[in-house]
Structures are given as structure tokens and as C-alpha cells.
Length: 134
Image (tube, rainbow, N blue to C red; front, top):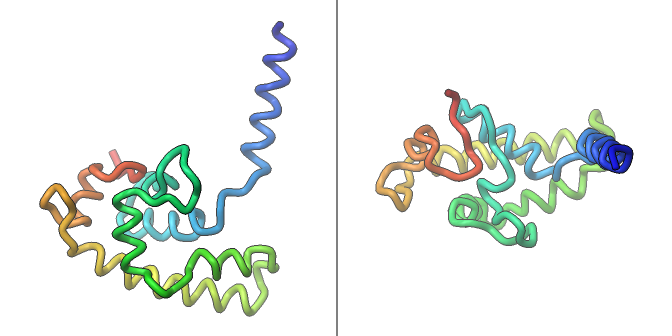
């Protein structure tokens, strides 16, 4: 009985280290963490857990509205397999960083459903999937 459990654990650990996160979460999650000084930003800040990846939650819908027409996820997906030093990949990353940073600045002053600004709600740990520093 111990051998199958051990094997399952080993396989899970290998998958965790081998399977990369989605490009949007990686790039945008890092930017959210840095912008707000968070200790954690997960997929579930924007996406609904256990649903299709294009199903957005309340926070994700607000962020999505700030990015209408930018096709950020699509553009990141198109360059994800290119080498990190590829000029086109770096250009897309630079454009995405600029566009997303502008969206976060706009988000900071928008009023969340709780009556606070999103910046205050995020810093207060009131947005699922975003954890402020302890």
C-alpha cells in the first residue's frame, strides 16, 4: 500500500516542477504581485476555480474590461514557445507589460463592490487569489 502512495506522490511532485503555469498567469501574476507588493497572486484572482480557463470571476471581469481589445493572453500565447531572447517575444512582453501596468493604475482607483478602491481591497486581502504580505 505504501509503494503506490509513494509513487503517486513522486509523480505529483514531478508534474508540479515540470508543467509550467499558463503564460498569462505567469507574466500578469508577477506584475500584479509587484504592483501591489503581494506575497501571492494566483490564477483564481481572475479565473473561477474548477471552471474553463476563459470563465472569469468578478475581479477578472473588471480587469478584462480594462484590457478590452488588447488580446494580451492571445499575444502571450503566440510567443510562448519562442526563445527568451527572441526579439519578437521581448517586444510582445514589453508591450504587454506597458498595457497591463496602465490597466493596473486605472484599477487602483476603481471602486470595488465593498465600497473601497480596488487598491485598498487588494491590500486588505479582500480579493480571492491575492494575498498581501503578512
